[in-house]
Amino acid sequence: MTETKATRTVRRGRVFPEIQWSEEKKAQCKTEREAFHKRCRVIFDRVQPELIKTHYNWYMAVEPDTGDYFIDKDNIVVAKIAHQKYPNARLFVFRINETGVCGTI
Image (cartoon, rainbow, N blue to C red):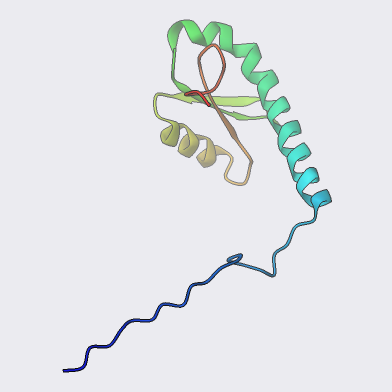
């Protein structure tokens, strides 16, 4: 019997080469993300001192337009709860601790 070798074509490059963002577009997205984070951080900083006493290391989803926030032990559950009330809104999830983030970088 003749054995056939599988020849693999190595594909290099972008998955979607037609999508190319300019440096201005990248900078604009970054500034929008930072502005959104600052709006959410204000709400988190306001309620964090009282929640850290009773809900340490829980998760908090913030909707900055209304100022509403939701808390739960699980980050997936808190996101689902928030998206049930605000299905089309952008949310930011914090961890209720001293820094507002989980883990270290």
